[in-house]
Image 1 (cartoon, rainbow, N blue to C red):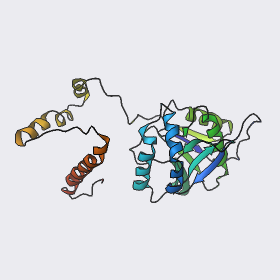
Image 2: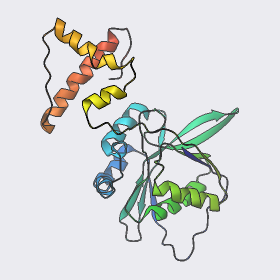
Image 3: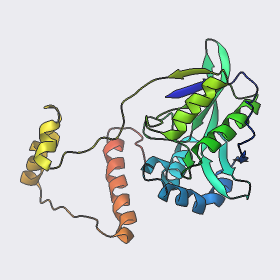
Length: 250
C-alpha cells in the first residue's frame, strides 16, 4: 500500500512538461463512455491484471459502491486523446476521533482485488502521475490518498513516490503479499504444496462423492456457454450458504 497525505499546494511543473488535462467522472455511466479507451490501454500494457478490467471494476462498484463517491479520472494529452485512466473513489473514515476522506482505487477495501494501478499508455506514466498530484492537491476535501495493492514493479507507483517526496508530502508504504500466485506445472505438484488440512478437499472428498452419487465433470470450453455455466455455479454457491441460514455472496 502507498498512501499520501494531502497538505501542500500543487507542485510546480518544469517548462519541459506538457501537462495532461484531467476529467473527473462522477458516475459509472460517464466513465463507461471511455470503455474503448480503457480496453485499448489494457491491451497495450502486458502487466495489466484482470482486476483492472472494466468487467471486474464495474461488478465491484455495483457490489460495494453504494456508500462511496466515484472520482474516476481520465488523463488526456494536448490533442484531447485519453492516455490514462484512474478509477478512484472517495470514502469517509474515522482516525483518532477525526473524520477523514480517503481516496482509493476502485476494487480496494474489500480484500478481493490485487495489482490495482493507474491504467496508462506506455510512456505516459510520469505525465499521469504529475497531473494526478496537481489534481489531488487542489481537492481540499480529500485528506489521504491510499494506493493499495499497487504492484511493487509499478512505474506509476515509482514515479508517484518520487514526485510526492519532492513535493514534501507525508508518505507511508507497506509491503504485502500478492493475492495471485503462480501455480505449479502439474496437478501432483499442486496437491503436494497444499496444507495437509486442506488437501483432502481435493483428494478424499471427491472420491467420497463419486462413491455415493453418479458424478460427471464437464468443461465449459465456449464463451457463449459461460453465462449459463456461471449461473449454475452461483446457484450452487448460494444454496450452500442459504442452507446454513446465511445470505451468501450472490
